[in-house]
Image (cartoon, rainbow, N blue to C red; front, side):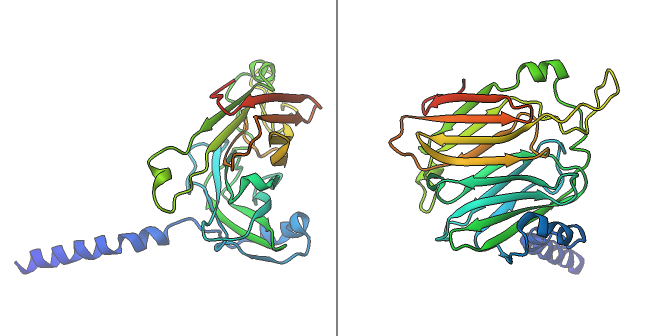
Length: 278
């Protein structure tokens, strides 16, 4: 009886400790030598504040595929600031700055997701410039490797032939979750641009030569004439770039997407808010 009681007590202590344990093994930013040497190149000598009260960055601790690691930035609901600009940085990537993003007023409290390449176990950090003029930082440590040199999902010719094709999907806010108290009832949109986004580190499996870098380096999404977001990117955005975000609807009749790649190709398309794909 005493043994059973002891076992029961041990099990109960494990169960009660589970939430605390789960919190402890979350993947916070790890201290390291790389970021101090990068910081000035990204934001100069500006002070960066702890961003935990402003937003969170979510990314998997162990990525299933290092070439398409999901990264989501979500602004805390009780924050009264606006995030106007965002830098996403993967410390250990050959080109650490994934991209610089600017946001328009209709993005509201930021809820933004994309997919990135991770080349080595690394911190992924987001540095936000808020409406108070200050910089704030949050991030995660991610175990992934080889993302920048991973072979393309499609063959080279097919990837290049499809470059510039776009899809935009809209997700309404009329779900059960959206009407719960405190829920964010704004609609969501998702934009995808077909593009191989060659990093310059991938090898042609036939010729065994490196494929020259060829990627989308600027992109702008508008609601009517108003900018939702603008991106300036490097090699670390994934193949077939995808962006999912919440926004505040306006009276504008439609949306437009414009992307430009490193070869100077310009891709443009207009969408109606009722589109699911195009």
